[in-house]
Image 1 (tube, rainbow, N blue to C red):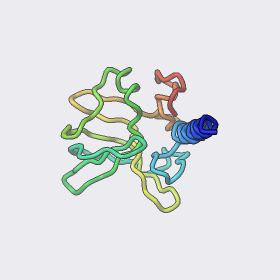
Image 2 (tube, rainbow, N blue to C red; image 1 turned 180 degrees about the horizontal axis):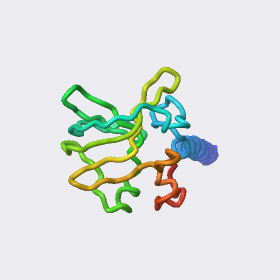
Image 3 (cartoon, one colour; image 1 turned 180 degrees about the vertical axis):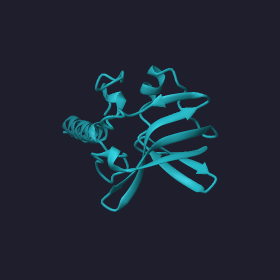
Image 4 (cartoon, rainbow, N blue to C red; image 1 turned 30 degrees about the vertical axis):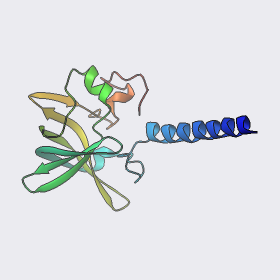
Length: 147
């Protein structure tokens, strides 16, 4: 009976973990539970420069700018930065993020298109479609591992 119980717990954990990874890996939103943002390019352009002070679940960071703290989403996975030979930001780095502020059901999200850090710029989204480049689209190197 104990062996059966352990097996059931492991199966449940795998199902829950797999479902969570599936949802996290295939969404098209900022990763904070507010849902997909399908047309990033329809937003209002932004440029924010500041110091990285925190990271958010789902691939975002917080910048301390001259006018206050700003949340930036869609910075992409670590492996994509590595493939582009750009150092992933850490707390204390100063960077410039460019992208679009998108209204999704009344919640405004700053979705990055590119980030410049230490003189290097990494393009994060296709300028024609807004699709994340780590998905393996135009100019991307991801093999569809992380969307």
